[in-house]
Image: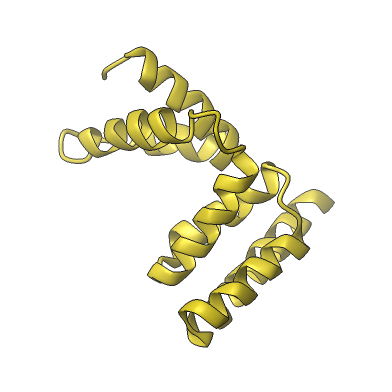
Length: 130
């Protein structure tokens, strides 16, 4: 696996945002088919883009929520809702992002996003009570 400086930077950010357990599982289960994708995502998405200082991670999380909602990617949306909360995005801000999605991208996308967010909130609340 490539250990370029950008990869290392991306790995650190990726683990902080989406959780070390998720990232470690993704990397550990990578094989010769999908390892290049894991390396690409870690280096370029998380290192080269998320690693830029011009936007704070909180802003990047809010942008991701809107874009992933519009793209109808529920698995990634769950992951990034939890990551947004780690980055300091409040539930109220998440709500506002999805209301914005409703107006500019469609009510069905927003409705699904609200439902997915509720699932994430409930799951995190249950984990916190353990």
